[in-house]
Length: 318
Image 1 (tube, one colour):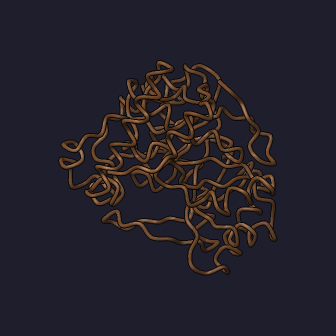
Image 2: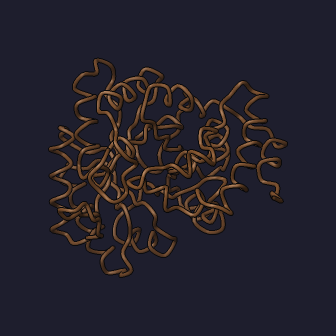
Image 3: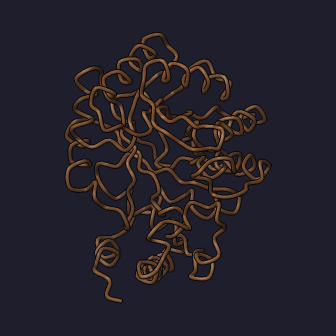
Protein backbone atom coordinates (compact mmCIF):
# COMPACT_ATOMS: atom_id res chain seq x y z
CA UNK A 1 0.00 0.00 0.00
CA UNK A 2 1.27 3.45 -0.91
CA UNK A 3 1.34 5.95 1.98
CA UNK A 4 0.96 9.75 1.85
CA UNK A 5 0.94 12.46 4.52
CA UNK A 6 -2.46 14.12 4.90
CA UNK A 7 -2.03 17.88 4.66
CA UNK A 8 -0.44 19.49 7.72
CA UNK A 9 -1.16 16.50 9.96
CA UNK A 10 0.95 13.66 11.29
CA UNK A 11 -1.44 11.19 9.64
CA UNK A 12 0.33 9.05 7.07
CA UNK A 13 -2.50 7.30 5.27
CA UNK A 14 -2.89 4.64 2.61
CA UNK A 15 -3.97 6.08 -0.73
CA UNK A 16 -7.24 4.18 -0.46
CA UNK A 17 -9.40 4.00 2.66
CA UNK A 18 -12.57 2.21 3.68
CA UNK A 19 -15.73 4.23 3.06
CA UNK A 20 -18.54 3.43 5.47
CA UNK A 21 -21.50 5.27 3.92
CA UNK A 22 -23.35 2.26 2.50
CA UNK A 23 -22.93 0.12 5.63
CA UNK A 24 -25.18 2.53 7.52
CA UNK A 25 -28.13 0.54 6.24
CA UNK A 26 -31.70 1.85 6.39
CA UNK A 27 -33.38 4.57 8.43
CA UNK A 28 -32.55 7.79 6.57
CA UNK A 29 -33.18 9.50 3.24
CA UNK A 30 -29.77 8.80 1.71
CA UNK A 31 -29.72 5.08 2.41
CA UNK A 32 -28.21 2.57 -0.01
CA UNK A 33 -30.87 0.06 0.98
CA UNK A 34 -30.70 -2.79 3.51
CA UNK A 35 -27.31 -4.00 4.70
CA UNK A 36 -26.23 -7.02 6.74
CA UNK A 37 -24.08 -5.94 9.71
CA UNK A 38 -22.04 -9.13 9.65
CA UNK A 39 -21.13 -8.44 6.01
CA UNK A 40 -20.10 -4.92 7.00
CA UNK A 41 -17.82 -6.11 9.79
CA UNK A 42 -16.25 -8.76 7.55
CA UNK A 43 -15.66 -6.13 4.85
CA UNK A 44 -13.92 -3.81 7.32
CA UNK A 45 -11.73 -6.64 8.58
CA UNK A 46 -10.78 -7.63 5.04
CA UNK A 47 -9.81 -4.04 4.18
CA UNK A 48 -7.61 -3.90 7.26
CA UNK A 49 -6.09 -7.28 6.34
CA UNK A 50 -5.07 -5.75 3.01
CA UNK A 51 -3.25 -2.91 4.77
CA UNK A 52 -5.82 -0.10 4.70
CA UNK A 53 -5.12 2.16 7.69
CA UNK A 54 -8.12 4.53 7.80
CA UNK A 55 -11.90 4.41 7.79
CA UNK A 56 -14.17 7.28 6.80
CA UNK A 57 -17.68 7.55 8.21
CA UNK A 58 -20.26 10.08 9.42
CA UNK A 59 -23.09 10.19 11.98
CA UNK A 60 -25.57 10.69 9.15
CA UNK A 61 -24.76 7.31 7.62
CA UNK A 62 -27.59 5.24 9.01
CA UNK A 63 -28.31 7.84 11.73
CA UNK A 64 -25.34 6.72 13.80
CA UNK A 65 -25.38 3.07 12.77
CA UNK A 66 -22.26 3.21 10.59
CA UNK A 67 -20.20 4.54 13.50
CA UNK A 68 -21.59 1.83 15.80
CA UNK A 69 -20.70 -0.93 13.32
CA UNK A 70 -17.16 0.41 12.98
CA UNK A 71 -16.79 0.24 16.77
CA UNK A 72 -17.99 -3.38 16.76
CA UNK A 73 -15.62 -4.26 13.95
CA UNK A 74 -12.63 -2.74 15.72
CA UNK A 75 -13.54 -4.37 19.05
CA UNK A 76 -13.19 -7.72 17.27
CA UNK A 77 -9.98 -6.71 15.46
CA UNK A 78 -6.62 -7.79 16.87
CA UNK A 79 -4.35 -5.88 14.48
CA UNK A 80 -3.20 -2.27 14.38
CA UNK A 81 -5.95 0.25 15.04
CA UNK A 82 -6.79 2.29 11.93
CA UNK A 83 -7.35 6.03 11.90
CA UNK A 84 -11.03 6.97 12.20
CA UNK A 85 -12.34 9.95 10.24
CA UNK A 86 -15.91 11.13 10.84
CA UNK A 87 -17.99 14.26 10.29
CA UNK A 88 -20.37 16.76 11.87
CA UNK A 89 -22.92 19.36 10.87
CA UNK A 90 -25.84 17.13 9.85
CA UNK A 91 -28.76 16.23 12.08
CA UNK A 92 -31.83 14.07 11.49
CA UNK A 93 -35.43 13.85 12.64
CA UNK A 94 -37.58 10.84 13.57
CA UNK A 95 -38.25 10.11 9.90
CA UNK A 96 -34.54 10.14 8.99
CA UNK A 97 -34.79 13.49 7.24
CA UNK A 98 -31.34 15.11 7.20
CA UNK A 99 -30.75 18.83 7.82
CA UNK A 100 -27.68 21.02 8.28
CA UNK A 101 -26.77 22.46 11.67
CA UNK A 102 -23.45 24.21 12.26
CA UNK A 103 -24.25 25.76 15.63
CA UNK A 104 -21.60 25.43 18.33
CA UNK A 105 -23.98 23.54 20.61
CA UNK A 106 -24.85 21.02 17.90
CA UNK A 107 -21.22 20.47 16.84
CA UNK A 108 -20.20 19.93 20.46
CA UNK A 109 -22.99 17.39 20.93
CA UNK A 110 -22.17 15.58 17.69
CA UNK A 111 -18.54 15.22 18.72
CA UNK A 112 -19.52 13.71 22.07
CA UNK A 113 -22.02 11.37 20.38
CA UNK A 114 -19.42 10.20 17.84
CA UNK A 115 -16.82 9.57 20.55
CA UNK A 116 -19.38 7.42 22.35
CA UNK A 117 -20.60 5.49 19.30
CA UNK A 118 -17.07 4.90 18.00
CA UNK A 119 -15.82 4.07 21.51
CA UNK A 120 -12.65 6.14 21.12
CA UNK A 121 -10.99 8.76 23.30
CA UNK A 122 -10.20 11.05 20.36
CA UNK A 123 -11.31 11.34 16.74
CA UNK A 124 -8.37 11.36 14.33
CA UNK A 125 -10.07 13.69 11.83
CA UNK A 126 -13.41 15.47 12.30
CA UNK A 127 -14.80 17.17 9.20
CA UNK A 128 -17.69 19.57 8.64
CA UNK A 129 -19.89 17.46 6.38
CA UNK A 130 -21.60 20.23 4.40
CA UNK A 131 -21.41 24.04 4.56
CA UNK A 132 -24.53 26.17 4.85
CA UNK A 133 -25.24 29.24 2.74
CA UNK A 134 -24.05 31.55 5.55
CA UNK A 135 -20.36 32.24 6.09
CA UNK A 136 -21.01 33.13 9.73
CA UNK A 137 -22.11 29.52 10.31
CA UNK A 138 -18.66 28.40 9.20
CA UNK A 139 -17.08 30.79 11.71
CA UNK A 140 -19.11 29.31 14.57
CA UNK A 141 -18.57 25.67 13.59
CA UNK A 142 -14.87 26.03 12.82
CA UNK A 143 -14.29 27.88 16.05
CA UNK A 144 -15.74 25.06 18.15
CA UNK A 145 -13.81 22.45 16.15
CA UNK A 146 -10.59 24.35 16.87
CA UNK A 147 -11.48 24.38 20.57
CA UNK A 148 -12.27 20.65 20.60
CA UNK A 149 -8.93 20.06 18.93
CA UNK A 150 -7.18 22.02 21.67
CA UNK A 151 -9.05 19.95 24.27
CA UNK A 152 -7.73 16.75 22.68
CA UNK A 153 -11.09 15.34 21.62
CA UNK A 154 -10.13 15.78 17.96
CA UNK A 155 -6.63 15.36 16.58
CA UNK A 156 -7.12 17.14 13.25
CA UNK A 157 -9.93 19.12 11.63
CA UNK A 158 -11.11 19.23 8.03
CA UNK A 159 -14.06 19.99 5.77
CA UNK A 160 -16.13 18.27 3.13
CA UNK A 161 -17.90 19.80 0.12
CA UNK A 162 -16.40 23.28 0.71
CA UNK A 163 -15.47 25.66 -2.10
CA UNK A 164 -12.40 27.92 -2.07
CA UNK A 165 -13.97 30.98 -0.35
CA UNK A 166 -15.41 28.71 2.37
CA UNK A 167 -12.01 27.08 2.95
CA UNK A 168 -10.38 30.51 3.11
CA UNK A 169 -12.95 31.55 5.71
CA UNK A 170 -12.06 28.55 7.86
CA UNK A 171 -8.32 29.03 7.38
CA UNK A 172 -8.58 32.55 8.81
CA UNK A 173 -9.72 31.01 12.12
CA UNK A 174 -7.60 27.84 12.42
CA UNK A 175 -5.43 25.68 10.13
CA UNK A 176 -7.33 23.39 7.79
CA UNK A 177 -5.92 19.87 7.43
CA UNK A 178 -8.03 18.42 4.63
CA UNK A 179 -10.87 18.72 2.17
CA UNK A 180 -13.17 15.88 1.13
CA UNK A 181 -14.76 16.66 -2.26
CA UNK A 182 -16.63 14.45 -4.73
CA UNK A 183 -14.32 13.56 -7.62
CA UNK A 184 -14.58 11.05 -10.42
CA UNK A 185 -14.55 10.77 -14.19
CA UNK A 186 -18.20 11.82 -14.05
CA UNK A 187 -17.70 14.76 -11.71
CA UNK A 188 -14.64 16.89 -12.39
CA UNK A 189 -15.72 20.43 -11.45
CA UNK A 190 -13.21 20.62 -8.55
CA UNK A 191 -10.32 20.55 -11.04
CA UNK A 192 -10.83 24.21 -11.98
CA UNK A 193 -10.27 25.99 -8.67
CA UNK A 194 -10.64 23.70 -5.67
CA UNK A 195 -7.88 21.16 -6.27
CA UNK A 196 -5.30 23.78 -7.38
CA UNK A 197 -6.06 25.82 -4.23
CA UNK A 198 -5.59 22.79 -1.99
CA UNK A 199 -2.33 21.87 -3.68
CA UNK A 200 -1.00 25.42 -3.36
CA UNK A 201 -2.11 25.72 0.27
CA UNK A 202 -0.86 22.33 1.48
CA UNK A 203 -4.37 21.08 2.24
CA UNK A 204 -4.79 17.32 1.98
CA UNK A 205 -7.49 16.03 -0.35
CA UNK A 206 -9.49 12.86 0.29
CA UNK A 207 -11.88 12.35 -2.61
CA UNK A 208 -15.19 10.56 -2.26
CA UNK A 209 -17.31 8.65 -4.80
CA UNK A 210 -14.35 7.90 -7.14
CA UNK A 211 -16.49 5.11 -8.66
CA UNK A 212 -19.54 7.38 -8.66
CA UNK A 213 -21.39 5.30 -6.09
CA UNK A 214 -21.03 2.02 -7.94
CA UNK A 215 -21.76 3.28 -11.44
CA UNK A 216 -18.10 2.96 -12.49
CA UNK A 217 -17.54 -0.57 -11.21
CA UNK A 218 -18.72 -2.69 -14.11
CA UNK A 219 -21.44 -4.17 -11.91
CA UNK A 220 -24.07 -1.58 -12.84
CA UNK A 221 -26.21 -2.44 -15.89
CA UNK A 222 -29.29 -0.85 -17.38
CA UNK A 223 -31.39 -3.56 -15.79
CA UNK A 224 -29.86 -3.13 -12.36
CA UNK A 225 -30.16 0.66 -12.50
CA UNK A 226 -33.81 0.38 -13.50
CA UNK A 227 -34.50 -2.05 -10.66
CA UNK A 228 -32.80 -0.19 -7.83
CA UNK A 229 -35.17 -0.21 -4.83
CA UNK A 230 -37.06 2.94 -3.97
CA UNK A 231 -35.09 3.26 -0.70
CA UNK A 232 -31.79 3.49 -2.63
CA UNK A 233 -30.96 7.18 -3.23
CA UNK A 234 -29.23 6.33 -6.53
CA UNK A 235 -32.59 5.64 -8.13
CA UNK A 236 -33.08 9.45 -8.15
CA UNK A 237 -29.61 10.38 -9.44
CA UNK A 238 -29.46 11.66 -13.04
CA UNK A 239 -26.33 9.66 -13.86
CA UNK A 240 -28.22 6.41 -13.25
CA UNK A 241 -31.07 7.49 -15.55
CA UNK A 242 -31.26 7.91 -19.34
CA UNK A 243 -29.94 9.62 -21.34
CA UNK A 244 -26.86 9.87 -19.09
CA UNK A 245 -26.83 6.18 -18.25
CA UNK A 246 -26.02 5.02 -21.80
CA UNK A 247 -23.10 7.45 -22.08
CA UNK A 248 -21.80 6.38 -18.69
CA UNK A 249 -21.91 2.72 -19.64
CA UNK A 250 -19.72 3.49 -22.66
CA UNK A 251 -17.20 5.00 -20.22
CA UNK A 252 -17.40 1.78 -18.19
CA UNK A 253 -16.44 -0.15 -21.35
CA UNK A 254 -13.32 2.02 -21.64
CA UNK A 255 -12.47 1.39 -18.00
CA UNK A 256 -12.93 -2.33 -18.58
CA UNK A 257 -10.62 -2.34 -21.61
CA UNK A 258 -7.86 -0.55 -19.69
CA UNK A 259 -8.33 -2.79 -16.69
CA UNK A 260 -7.89 -5.84 -18.90
CA UNK A 261 -4.40 -4.62 -19.87
CA UNK A 262 -3.32 -4.65 -16.23
CA UNK A 263 -5.42 -7.51 -14.93
CA UNK A 264 -7.40 -5.04 -12.81
CA UNK A 265 -11.08 -4.36 -12.21
CA UNK A 266 -13.15 -1.54 -13.68
CA UNK A 267 -13.44 0.06 -10.25
CA UNK A 268 -9.69 -0.02 -9.66
CA UNK A 269 -9.09 1.90 -12.87
CA UNK A 270 -11.73 4.50 -11.95
CA UNK A 271 -10.13 5.01 -8.53
CA UNK A 272 -6.59 5.09 -9.93
CA UNK A 273 -7.65 7.86 -12.31
CA UNK A 274 -8.59 10.10 -9.36
CA UNK A 275 -5.33 9.33 -7.57
CA UNK A 276 -3.41 10.44 -10.65
CA UNK A 277 -4.23 14.10 -9.90
CA UNK A 278 -1.27 15.63 -8.00
CA UNK A 279 -3.52 17.39 -5.46
CA UNK A 280 -5.24 14.18 -4.38
CA UNK A 281 -3.88 12.47 -1.27
CA UNK A 282 -6.21 9.49 -1.12
CA UNK A 283 -9.60 8.14 -2.19
CA UNK A 284 -12.50 6.79 -0.15
CA UNK A 285 -13.49 3.37 -1.42
CA UNK A 286 -16.87 2.16 -0.23
CA UNK A 287 -17.58 -1.55 0.13
CA UNK A 288 -20.43 -3.61 1.54
CA UNK A 289 -18.84 -7.08 1.39
CA UNK A 290 -15.52 -8.90 1.35
CA UNK A 291 -15.96 -9.50 -2.39
CA UNK A 292 -16.29 -5.79 -3.06
CA UNK A 293 -13.23 -5.03 -0.91
CA UNK A 294 -11.13 -7.54 -2.82
CA UNK A 295 -12.26 -6.05 -6.13
CA UNK A 296 -11.20 -2.45 -5.57
CA UNK A 297 -9.19 -1.72 -2.43
CA UNK A 298 -5.76 -2.22 -4.05
CA UNK A 299 -6.39 0.55 -6.60
CA UNK A 300 -3.72 2.72 -4.96
CA UNK A 301 -1.03 0.50 -6.42
CA UNK A 302 -2.23 0.92 -10.02
CA UNK A 303 -0.32 3.53 -12.05
CA UNK A 304 -2.08 4.51 -15.26
CA UNK A 305 -0.11 5.64 -18.31
CA UNK A 306 -0.61 8.95 -20.11
CA UNK A 307 -2.24 6.98 -22.92
CA UNK A 308 -4.69 5.42 -20.46
CA UNK A 309 -5.57 8.82 -19.03
CA UNK A 310 -6.10 10.35 -22.46
CA UNK A 311 -8.34 7.45 -23.47
CA UNK A 312 -10.50 7.83 -20.39
CA UNK A 313 -10.80 11.60 -20.74
CA UNK A 314 -11.59 11.74 -24.47
CA UNK A 315 -15.17 12.82 -25.31
CA UNK A 316 -17.84 10.17 -25.69
CA UNK A 317 -20.19 10.35 -28.65
CA UNK A 318 -23.22 8.16 -28.15
